[in-house]
Image (cartoon, rainbow, N blue to C red):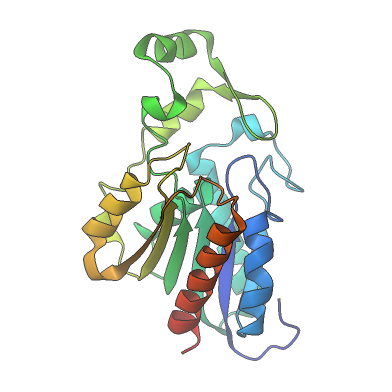
Length: 238
C-alpha cells in the first residue's frame, strides 16, 4: 500500500487454489502496477500461506467471504480515498472474482487469468459418475495438487454446484480482461471464450497459443503481464 493518504486506485490480487499471495503472477504484477500509481493488496485465502484454517475446508462460498472481508478491510483503512478498485484473479481467484462481480457493482474492472469456470463440472476433477458417488459415500476425495494431495470433503463439491458464472454472466457490468492458454491442462480455454462472447463489448479476450494453466513459459507470462497492466492502467488511471 502507498504510504500517502492521497486518493489512488487499488488492485486486489487473488491467487489460485493451493497457491499463495506471493505467487509468480502476483510477484510480476505488483511492481508494475505500483509504478503506475496503483496500490496493491494481496491476501491468502483461508488455509493458504499465512492465513489460518485448513485448505481442505475451503469452498467457493468461503472464497467469496474472504474476498468480501478483504474489500471491507481496504475501505475501513482508506475509504473514500480509492479512486477505483480492480480485481485480479488467477484460476480459483479468477472464478471468485467473476462470481463476486455477478452480485456486486462497486468494482471498476477485473483481470481474470485462466479462470476456473468449469470447476463445478465432474469432468474437471477427472472423475466418472461412479467416482462422484463414491466421493459422496466416503465423504472425502484425495485431490492431487502442486503442493501435495488435498483431502477434499464432499461439501466442497456440493458448494461448487451452487455457483455458475456463465449462467449469471449477464449480471457483470464492468470491463473484464480475460487471458487463457490453449494448452491449459486444468481448465479448457473455451470456457473463457464463452464468457467473453456472453459479455460482448465488456470483455477483452487474450488467447495465448500453447500456454499452459500457469503460463510457465516466460514469454506467455510476460505477454499476459504487459496486457494486464495496460488494461488496468487504462481503466484505473487514464
